[in-house]
Length: 95
Image (cartoon, rainbow, N blue to C red):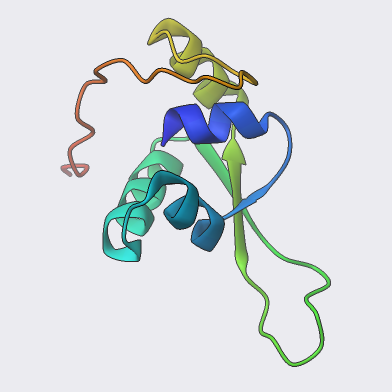
């Protein structure tokens, strides 16, 4: 997930596109995106000008903290051949 978002750089990504590019189901991708956003590693926004007849979609990109975290974990940004190293599992927040 971090590699895909890092590869997009400052561009926004749709969750559906991330599902397709990572070959993962929505039930896997969206909880990860939510956890990353809760930790301040991912910025989220609603699409401002969706095509007629389709609802606005959520958009995602790495925050400044997310970029720094990805770098610290060795995730390559904007490379054609992204190799994803083992990343510590992000567990749900505990209160």
